[in-house]
Amino acid sequence: MITDKIKHELHVCRQMRYAPNPLSCGNSGSETIMVELENEIAKNNLDIEVIPKNCMLMCDVGPNIKLMPEKIIWNKVTLNNIPSIINNCKKVLNID
Image (cartoon, rainbow, N blue to C red):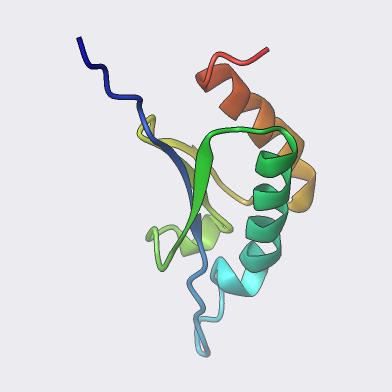
């Protein structure tokens, strides 16, 4: 019997907006967050791909990250949230 392994992805919004409404994930540091997520995923040897996305339609609460296929969403993410996101990913992957 062949079983397909579920592919997990972290979608990171990088949308940049400009005046008159400059509020967006890209303007709020999502690029730096994405790099740090990739570093932590590699450091923890997690089988999760980080995928840059253009817009999640939640600019007011960005930066936004979504774990797929579970559809777990984190809003207003900062570098301080990364350990918690990594721990949540470990739980989803059943890694202690």
